[in-house]
Amino acid sequence: MTKRLIASQFYVTEGQGSHHKLLYFPKKGWQSKTDSAFNFMVSKGTLQPLSEPEAEKLAALRRTATLRWLPKTIGLRPVISIKNDKLEVDIIHSKSYLRGLLQKTGHTYMNAQRLNQIWKRLPKNKIEKLYMVSVDIHDAYGSMIQDKVLQIVQETSEMYLGEDFMLKSVHIDYWRKTRVCRELQNDRSYSNNCQTRKVSDLMTTIQRAIKCQTIKRKKRTFLVTKGMSQAMPLSAALCNLYIAHMDRARLAEFSAEPCDTMIRAVDDYLYITPDKARAKRFLDVMSTGFQDYGMYINPNKTQHNLETTSEINFFGYLIDPDSQEVYVKYSQGENAPYRNSVTFSNWADPLAVMKDKLKRIAAFKLNSLTTDPEYMSVEGAMWNVFQTACVVACSFKAMLGSWRSSFDLSTLSDLVHDSADNIAKKVYRLRNSNGMRLHETRWVAVRAYRLCLSHGAADDSNFLGDLVPALECMEEHYRSTVRPTRFRLFWNITESLPPQFTQGH
Image (cartoon, rainbow, N blue to C red):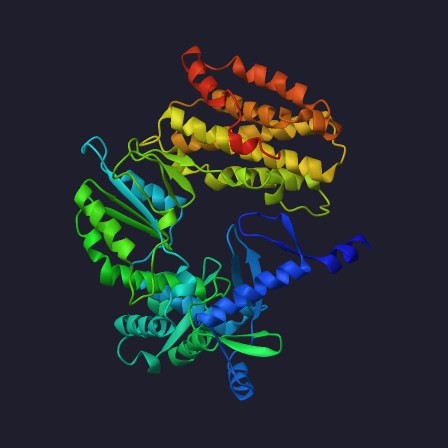
């Protein structure tokens, strides 16, 4: 009854950046917002109204998609998707083909391990200062020029498969549980159950995904004439291929100098150079934009240290340009409580699931990039440990509060101990014990748990019970193992909770 009453008066949805938190909008106000956003897309030519014969013709080539809206801090984000589109064989094989083309161009998908390898190659103690410029392309997926996307796919195919690529066939095979295109991969061992596909058929699927995507609204059909939705299965590979082509055509000069580094993670760029003039040149070029590609940066997200020293945000991490240290960045707690970042179900074994979730959360950003002793000091690495442990503790608290189940004190204490032990052992392996002992890292992790769980404990006493006093005893035990020479340093790091872990938790 309550759900039906709410549904009759409000539109309920998640929002961009609010994780799993539900947002409630009065239906009349929501309808007005979405109508304005839709009309704006039609007025700027992103959506083109179709006649009934045109709509029927395109519907025979590609299924009509659904359109929904995600609230952002400012405005709404359109999400266009087709149910189960990613499970269609033609789409899966076309995606494998596109990823093969990307690999041939030398592109590698950015991750923490790859960024760590790049970071270790940066010059250290040789050059007085490194200049860093970070820029973000505004709405990269939605800004792609469709005809140019197709042109780039065709040019890249011709480059690696020959002028007669449309007459050739390729083999789609399994490798490491994913499908790959044999002809576009390096020598590897494959399974025997490959599937032969004509390149012309794959290109037809790609063309239809780009040029024939329609949506329906109020009994009227519209053609998407600009860009692609990020929710479409082929969009990530196509966007990477598109921007990689732009890199080679317009930004090659910034990779010419051996002491310069240009890093790209899809639509985010980080340029690093010891030459201030080249850093300014990169910023000027990116600020001008690339009209022939339809790509322009978002000036509000541009960061650099050309005038003053400032931290740089990139790929979800925080970079200190002076020390070159990389810090974990957990700012989502400033906008939404961490309980909204965890989903819950009626699990048969909640403790086992909780243990697994805590382990995964800790592994998310506590990795080689944020702990490597080649550029991370003991202080910097331990700060990353403390922040990560705070995130894990907030998630632990959120799970306990959502279940409201009675777990005995011994079980919960063991769970915290195992979680802190997992964090300590992970850091020990990553740093090869360089300056950080197991017991000291455990103390920092347990202290993070105790601080997070004791914050607002008066409101949570009904499910935390005697856990906080038990953690105080555990913290005191590990504190006695901390070396006196390290205690003051670690105490300064863990003296209080960072602000993002105190709001709404």
